[in-house]
Image (cartoon, rainbow, N blue to C red; front, side, top):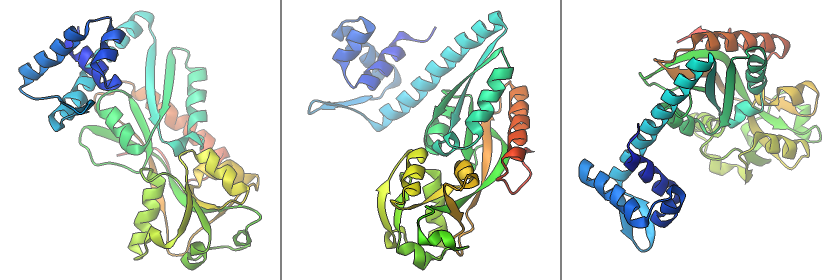
Length: 309
């Protein structure tokens, strides 16, 4: 069983309060404090920097919390695996990016769940960096992300490739063009994803490769939700840089116009990333199969999906 001191520590960190953690765990505050002190003594570190009424993790404390979360996740996975073994069922947690929420990926996972009665899938969405951290700590079993990371702890299967486009309204004069120049883009109101999104970072890296800075553009809004951005663009509040796959339905129905930007060939891979000890290879194969079927009816890729890397 996981050490109760770690459970206490994680609760204190989550609530940022010894008092609130004590209430949540039905313990006294001295008991909670004692648990944290014992851990600090065992590990030879100071976990929290106490002072000025704030509870802040030290650098050593951040490391302790990272591994405490991993231990907790592993123990929960152990309990879940034993339960699944008894019930002849399995539960898989899949992490996807916010862009994937707006393309066919959620539909693919839903399709798989509907035909695989013994598998229950939980989908969470987050930034790429946060998803990789959750994967490292076993909070998720599988991450479906744009781009890739070099990490020997993970295996990768390429599902597809995608490209970024300039999404504009039918009312925007740019919609009548076949391509947009950077000078033309500088004159537009730009609605972008948040700074930690892969879509935005890929756009910035291609700008920089052309010796262009994002500061040269009129960014009027930063929005995390892709659906919100598409709605704002459709209503002609501005233009945006979005994944073609995330706009596939709107482009097909003519609700948005997607344009390339001169000198910016912004393509990237869509990958499934998982631990080397991941046991459910049949699930990955079936996701690939269903994804390929949907891609044929909703084409947006430029390469052959399903490459093991």
